[in-house]
Structure formats: C-alpha cells, structure tokens
Amino acid sequence: MAERSELPSKISTPDWVKEAIFYQIFPERFCNGDPSNDPANVQPWGTPPTPYNFMGGDLRGVIQRFDYLLDLGINAIYLNPIFQSSSNHKYNTYDYYQIDPRFGDLATFKELLNLAHSHGVRVILDGVFNHCGRGFFPFYDLLENGQHSPYKDWFYVKGLPLHAYRGKVNYGVWWNVRSLPKFNVANPATRRYLLDVARYWIQQGADGWRLDVPNEIADHDFWREFRQAVKAANPQAYIVGEIWYTLDATPWLQGDQFDGVTNYVLQQALVNFMAKEKIKVRAFDRRIRQLLARHDREINLAQLNLLGSHDTSRFLAESGGETGKLKLAYLFLMTYPGAPCIYYGDEVGLTGGLDPECRRCMPWDESQWNTPLRDFVKRLVAIRKANSALRIGSFEPVLADAARNIYAYQRQDESQAILVVINNNPAAQRAEVPLSKDSLRGVKAFADLLSGQEHAPVGGTLRLTVPGRAGAVLAAQH
Image (tube, rainbow, N blue to C red; front, top):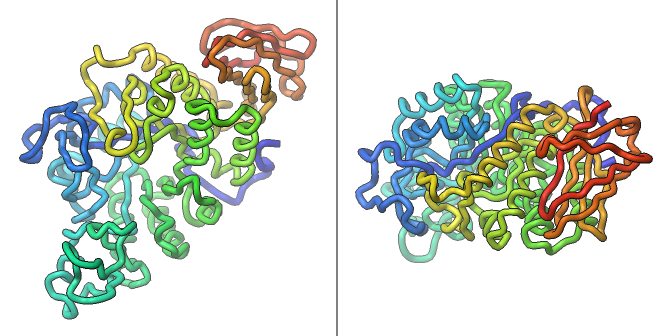
C-alpha cells in the first residue's frame, strides 16, 4: 500500500484544508490597487525585481483582483507577510500588530477578509516568529538602553553595546543576517508576546498561519503551546510549517504541533522527474510511496503541496520554459492528496529563477498571458473541486512503466474511483494499465474528465494513447 492504514486517526486536521486549493500571493508584486500608499522610491510595475526595490503591490490590489481569483476557482489564499517592515518581503517585522502602511491598514485587511469569507475563500497569514527586524521595539530599546533595557532577555545577547549595523555581530541572528535578530523563546515574556500575536490575528478572522523557518526554533514545546493558543481561538485554524526537503518533518507532524508542512519533498520529486528529468519513473514512484507512508493520512490530506514559491525558481524556469512540463506537474498536483497551492502568476506563464527573479510582478496585460495554460489550470481546479476522490480519496500507484515513462495511480473514496495516467515523455505513448485492483474490476468504461473521451478496458487492461507531456483523469463508469 502507498498510504498508511485507513484505521481511524487520532490526529485531527482542519476539514476545510482537505477541500482547499490555495493561491499564494506575494503582496508587493501582485497588484498595486492604491498608489497613494506607494513608497517614495516605487518603480514602474513590471520593472525587473531586485532584493530591495518596490513596485507598489498592496492589499487593495488583492481586493481589486479578487474576481480574477474566483474565476480561477481557488478557495484559499496564502499571503506572504503583511506586517510593518522596511523590506519588500516583510520578513523583518517591525510591528506584529500593524499592517504595513504600504500594504494598507487593519480596515483594508478586514475588508479583504470579509470579501474572501463571503465567497467561501479562506486566508492564511505568514508568521515570522523565529526572528524580527531591527526596528522591532524590544530590539530597538535594547539598542538604545543596553544593559538597562528590560528586553535584554528577549534575544541571544553575546555582548553590549549591540553591533547592529557594523562590526562583528554580537547577538543571535538568522543565517548570519544582522538585520534579523533571533528571538529567545525560552524567555517567558517573549514567548507570551509571540503566542499573543498568533492568537490575535486568528481572533481578527485569519484562517491560519504559514510558519516561517519553524525548525530554527529548537523547542517543540513552543510549537505545542502555539497550537493550543491558535486552536483555542479557532479549532479549524490551519497551521502549516515551512520545512524544507533537507529535513524530516515527522517530529512536527504528530498531531500536537502542525497540521501540515510546505511539501518541498514532493516539489523536489516533481522538479527532478518532470522539469529536469533527472530521475526515472520508478525512482519517482518510490519517492511518492515513501512520502505518503511517512505520515498519518490526516496529515497527508493537510499538506501544502506546491511546485514553487517565493523561495525557489519557478517550475517553468526549472523546465527550461517548456509549458508542457508545467501543465503535467499541475495535473499531478491537482490529483494528489493534500492541498495544492498555485504560486501567483504560474498559471499565466510567469517565469523566473531564484529570488529575486521568482518575485516578478504579476502581469495584468492579458496579451502577456499564456491563456491556454491558464485555461488548463482552471480546468484542473474545477475537476478537483467536482470529484471528492481527488481530494479525500486513497492514493494507490498502479503502474510505473520505465520503458514508456508512464505513471498511473488510482484515487478512490466511497463515491467514486478515478484512474490518473501521466505520460512524462515528449512523444505520445501507448499506455497499458492493469486493472487488478478490486475497485477497477468490472468497470465498463472510463470517462476522461479532461478530454471527454471514453475508454473501454479489454481483458482486464486499459489501453489508451496519451499525448506527450500529458495525462488523462479517468473516472470509472460501472
């Protein structure tokens, strides 16, 4: 079996996440809806991104383009940090209780939340609780008052005065970046403050937290307390940790800390199999089986599955600009257990390498869009939403054809069985899928939810021609 036993789980994750299709928005680059709050040095929309420049994107822009998101079909939004900060990315927080004025204010945020919730769309926030910016008031107080500051235990101070701007760094920071002082969460006042922040924004109506570099806080009890605080405010709040593929996320996924993690293990498997073609279908199959067997089924259904993010090259860039590879990867993502996440602009063909290239402005001139790509992604979103087996069904591989580079798997719940066939080959291939599973025996025909074609099995085998870099999503017809 590819997945763990389907016995009732003691782990509980939010029901809505199992139905969610996320859209990740990097607010500074999505849409400039209110030029009046632009920074003084704002550059024209579409200017090549640098680590430091500003384009003027804001929350009003998300509100103005909300119909675009509804048309795509997504039902959840993940916002990169929106709290007060000096940077374009906002990971160096100055004030955890204020929306950055270049993005709007609390009223703007509430307007966005109300708009989203009125359409059944959830909104989760990016929480940076490992470190802050130098402008955060306790650090600034420590900078000003040194030994007399009541906040000296909030950080890992190795010497005073602090060398915040020059000289050898003498306090704990994230990855040697002096502008990102690291919190001492063992200090009760610091801990209490951060948990209060987490609780406050859930009480304001946010639907959950994506947690930045949570592994850097080497204290699982902190995350247990974090979960208790957040779930007390809203038992259905989603807690998803940013854990990279270099780490085993299992310690955080025991049901007492995170509901899921950013699934970079899956992302790497897809990049290496489809984008770069570094691994073959059987190696890909092994990785998928291992990944699903690693965690409880409740966790698998609550993972945040992505092809790329603000921290990676875009999948289209990894694919050498081959749209077919991106389409195939989205086909897999939308038919795999867990919550799929579209990184803004991927659906119209936005490309770019590592940061800052992956943070380009969203193009709103439709002549710049790859419209067939967007139509395809929109169709996949609709298919996932219309078929419960693709969201909450079991996952079982049925074919890993090394000769043809074809992968097939079954998704099944109480109401339906769906067979997905993927051809990771540039040329069309004749797939021969054995129907040995009990649920597939006696099936008279399969209807392709993508093409509308019907395929009838013969002698316990389904044979069909799959175009290059394409797939079929086949609903069993009994």
